[in-house]
Length: 278
Image 1: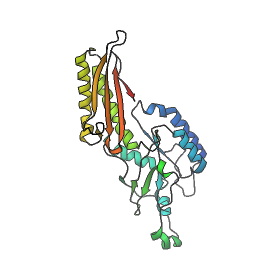
Image 2: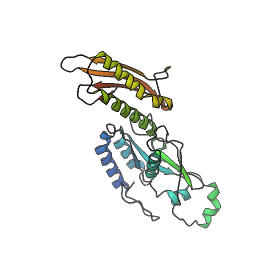
Image 3: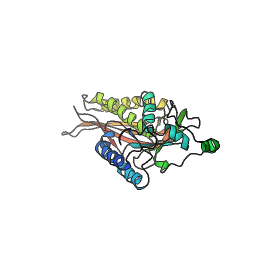
Image 4: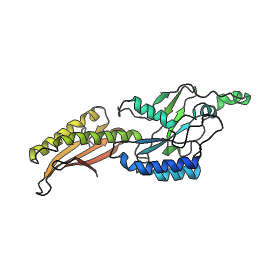
């Protein structure tokens, strides 16, 4: 939340948008490539001062990363009360409160807000307060928008897009499920690294991977290819004398997002499992 410097809690104070964009771009370029291998996603707060060309430059720097930009939306008065907070902090708190329960998506979720900054309304504001409308959010379709409720006691995550390619196809909620599936397959396959390379173990690997995916199936998060209720998992072995290995092919669909997962799990003797996306 304080990537671009401390939050300006005093009205009229702002962070330097150019400093924020430079720091955020450098952060993602350094750590972004490691998010996939660590089964992680990143949410960054987007200060309201970052607009126009600066926003487009930042989006270009994030393109292809498992990252989301979080920005507030609300009326002028609600933004004065709550807009100084970190929207990414609210989203991060929501994820943390779930305790790793990836089946609870983010879009549409309500989050309570504690008392915000006390703002003294002027007389004209009292006349138009009831007719205030939400201010437009630049690049809304590419940002995780956190909308303050009219009573200013809660907010709602209206959408949760990430910058993974193809742009607009991978919400953060879908990424969290995909990463949880990858991690489960990796941990299950690691139990076979010291097993013999033979047909029985190939069948055992496929059966274990199939079973490990059932909690996701029961939660309605994962199904098989179109027309099938459960993922397709097939095992095999490569008897190359120099590099014998077990492998398994997994075909599944992330149901709420209609995203297809095609994975290959490869195991070489005494080596860590390798996951390849096709």
